[in-house]
Amino acid sequence: MSLLDLLPKVKRERESEVRKKVAIGTAIGLTVGAVAGVLLAPKAGKESRDDLVKTIGELPGKAKELSDKAHKMVGEATGKIAEETHKIMCREKEMLAGLNEDVLKGQWHELRGGIKAKWGKLTDNDLTTVEGQFEKLMGILQTKYGYSKDKAKEECDDFINANKK
Image (cartoon, rainbow, N blue to C red; front, side):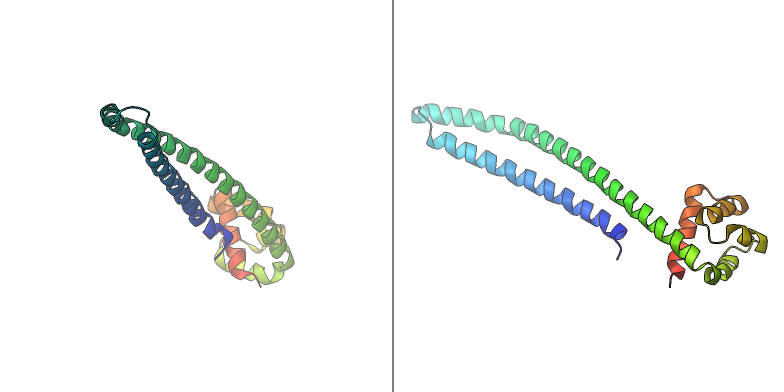
């Protein structure tokens, strides 16, 4: 299992942890506040009960307010996680692309036949032009097969990763 496969799972786990912590913190805060209010009340019993009833009536609104705040915090955390995940994935892709360029250059003669078999439209002249250069192979695939740059890179990476020694 590669790092790229683990990143979405780690992201979901982090989001879940943040939600759990916010919910637990909210519940603890509400409980502690209610208990402290009853125990430390300087008022008489009837007054305290009336205030307690009033406070209990306000709880749904406060809970909604806290829930909205928690939702906002989770959204912000999710955004940060997504941003960091994107940065990690970009660095990983750049590293893999560099490795694949090295593999293509180093194993050009071994990979040449497989390239010709996979992409039958490529001529011997095309392969001579490429001569182990990753960017040139991508360019020829874009021209001959109409691939986008991203699609050509993905196809090259997949081929090289499947044929590494």
